[in-house]
Image (cartoon, rainbow, N blue to C red; front, side, top):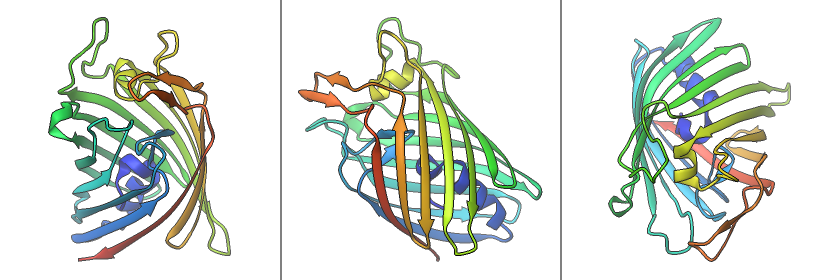
Length: 242
C-alpha cells in the first residue's frame, strides 16, 4: 500500500483486500510532480516517496510515509511525514476507517490530521476525509475546528484484459483550512473540485489531473499558483514484503 493521502481510496481498499494475515510491507516511488487533491505539493517538481505498513488479519493496519515537498521558492518546507492507522475489511462491500496525521518541518507549525472513511462496491468507492485538528493558527475570520474542512471523493477503477489499469476520480475540497494550507480561495470561496484519470501498467502510472480553480497570485513566492492548469504526472512505484 502507498500512502492513502497520495492515491486515495483505491490504495486504502487494496490494503483491506490483502490483509488476510499479519504482514509488513514497504513501498517506494518517484514522480515528476507530487499532487494532492489536484494541487501540487512539490512546486511542480519531482518527488521521491516511500513508506512502511503493517497489516493484521483482524483488519487493523498502521503505517508511515514520507515525501519531499515545496510550496514556493525558499518557503521553509522540505518534507512531509505522515502517520496513519485504521481498520478495513469486507467482501462484496468493503470498508476502511482511520486517522491520518500530516507532519511537516517544525518551523512551519502547520501539522494537521484527518479522520477518514471509505466504502467500496466492485470497482466503485466513495471516501470522506474530515479535518480533525491542527497546530496552525487561525487567521481572523477563519475556523480550523473539527469537521470544518472536508474532502469528498468518488473513484472507479478497472483493469483491461491486457493488464492496463484505468482509474477515474472526482473530488470536492472545502473549508477555511483548505485555503489556509493551499491558498486556493477566490473571492472568499474556499471550495474547489479536482478531476483525474490514471493509467497504470505494472509499476508505472500516468495521471492527467485538473481542477475547476483559476490561476491565482502568489505574492509570497513572487509568481502565481497554476491551480487552473492541467497537470500530467508520470510515476514509478514498487512494493515489497519485509
